[in-house]
Length: 448
Image 1 (cartoon, rainbow, N blue to C red):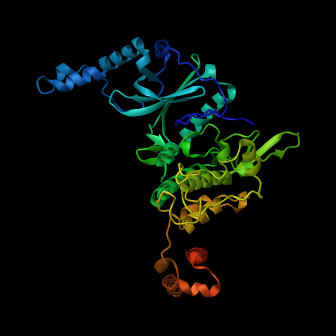
Image 2 (cartoon, helix red, strand yellow):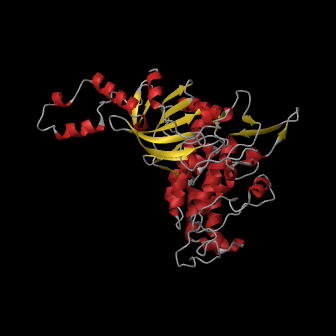
Image 3 (cartoon, one colour):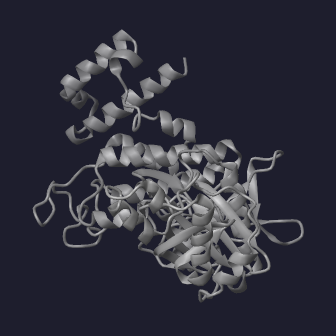
């Protein structure tokens, strides 16, 4: 099995353990060998060095614009000359210069830079060095470029604006959208507070729509986790297609000859082995494998941890596919810093934490969706269309969704829940019973 050593930073996608490279100071030589084959990620930039641009702005009221600016050809030559003489401050992709702002992340054989164009637009550039990556890691990067090109224009997938493979230098440059942070960091920053239901619904819908895009193109991501959902201008976008794989036209599954992914979010079928006729190992993964991973992320947003987080690596690999291991669904929501601590909301059954803060019960709709995703049998898991139409995201309107007679009945039950006591149902279960009844009737109406 391949055990990952992934950096927590966004964008980084090598699926194997490799050494961290030392950034080589050879940009000047690389710039002179670059062939301009593609348009820049930005359109018609005003190529003025930052210091000159600032000075030019100060002189706007006292000097004509003609004296403060040079021709576009001269400006481009000046910027490229600067990149050649000061390579540590610039990256050039297909002849287009980008000024480095900082290293945003690093891991394996790659570094991600936050960069700025001459017209002050912000992007991210992933720089991969072949010299420190093995064949499988390089194949993963090429696969990522291919799939990102396939999803060009989707608002739910990170956008790749340009890429350059310099074989003679052993480099890959990928110019992408810049994201402020990822969902993993958002959950960490919650600390002692669970996410609110409105936030969960917002992020959940965006995650589902991103996976719907790739599933519609017959692609299984196979490594869904909070760190692979990047926040770009407030919206979640799916990243890291290094181990994603397309489904063949004659099947509904992808085949893998090894366990690849992040264990806490791996589906049971991603861990189970299927023996082939040749005696080899084979994992068959379909779209349902991604549904399991989505369910784990939703569980984490609700409870502050994944359901197998407390187990050792060996125990996880044994428990995830084991149907006798019952996944716990505690009564109360929790923040990541509350789990196992003195103020853990699920430490007892009282309505307040030991520190006096109120406890938030898990809604019946949220509980049903988590259970619908975390079925060990892939065929029993909910599908993306079902999840998008579920009452968790689409609250049921009794007035419009159900017949008038049924609506009156449910309204009566909601107003007088004590009627359910005649059915030997405790008061604490009334809301769950009502929700289940409403859900069943809603599905019945949809199937008519």
